[in-house]
Length: 315
Ligand SMILES: Nc1ncnc2c1ncn2[C@@H]1O[C@H](COP(=O)(O)OP(=O)(O)O)[C@@H](O)[C@H]1O
Ligand SMILES: CC(=O)N[C@@H](CCC(=O)OP(=O)(O)O)C(=O)O
Image (cartoon, rainbow, N blue to C red):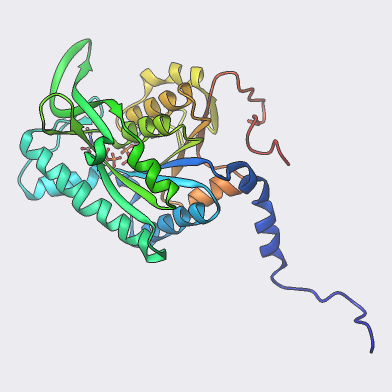
């Protein structure tokens, strides 16, 4: 019998290279908890939402423990509008009247969460939806906004006082994917509170001892000089971010405050990603590229090339 003279050229070989590129990241993140916040502004179309669900299921099958916290600001505003209620934001937070609270809860828990759970569960019996009310996941007291040194009443907006991670951990241990709406049970008056989803995601990441907080939004990352320039800050330390905070506007305020809180309380990296890019989660976690903005704890050395102790180190 004759021996083959040359190795056959397999057209699928680049796919193997892509898979192998992911190996160090698979090793690094195995068994780690990742809190992924999916912002309402990033839920642009059905295709993107389906790609988001695929990525999260991929993380789960790759041995990570993903937890989804979702937003829905634009969806809430649209529904309020249909009810003839106006949307007003103060210090980046929705002024939430009792009537608006009913709408917030209906849209987040009844629409956005249900849709994401449905998309994830196309891939198997994985996702379980919950709000902060379930099993005392998130308790809150009334939050007052601070504007120009004044304490301003913004209605039923909550400040998280306690997180009971028991139910989320039980779901993760059972191989499920918790999908959390940012509504908290009230620790002071028996009702519920509206919590900004970035704030909720950061608090949950800390309480779970997550390795990564990933925030998907509708911009490429944190712009150094928004809205004048599209230069994205690729990496910064907690202290560098703290200095920038007073210059930030609108939705970026709770987002970056959340990232800062997370890395100051044990989360290894907090990242802001462009949710409009299909499969941005996989690109960020499993490739050498790294997209968006990464916030690292103080003490991480970032050199001129933007290298640090994360991407590229293990190669
Ligand atoms: N420095 C900045 N870099 C990027 N975006 C910024 C910045 N400052 C303010 N923004 C605004 O913050 C928005 C993202 O926050 P938000 O609208 O709350 O999104 P999400 O629904 O994803 O939470 C961006 O679309 C942009 O308009
Ligand atoms: C208090 C407060 O502002 N809550 C937010 C909750 C939803 C949210 O945060 O959604 P995004 O992540 O899409 O912005 C709101 O009512 O819009």
